[in-house]
Image 1: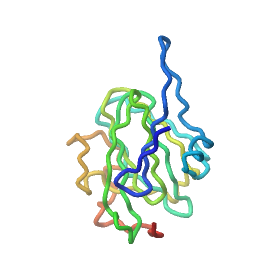
Image 2: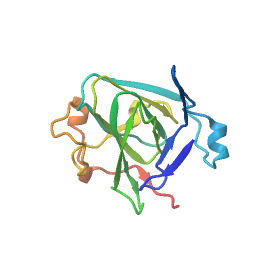
Image 3: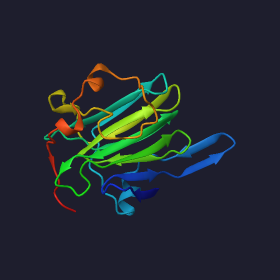
Length: 185
């Protein structure tokens, strides 16, 4: 497993090894011991989510779940192609308001670890895209929140995405009061 730090401290890119032959490939997408041996100790995962988007240009986000139900997510693409985005929303963080965007595809097998304290969103870049992600906390509707997708200057690669009403009506980042506080390095 290759583990790389992104430009946002704590947000990591994980690339599992693939073993291929004439039949296809085998890959271990998650192994706590392998990660621990590499010095990475992620929290326990309690829920797996599977999202399907029929059309390219489907944008979901930017979402968060507030404390005490804050979620970390390990995101991968099961089919298709997507641009996955994380935004630091920890008040006092040196990278507050900054974002990263990484392409996740079925072919590249990469996974993005997004810890609590970050917005998360993605836009599909291929038809019939599936997103699979592990969460460190159960879904809690009373802690669910969102920030408008186009209020941070993120280059999503689409100007008129397919959005839910909730995402289209989310508050702008400038009007957002974060429930997260940076606890230092």
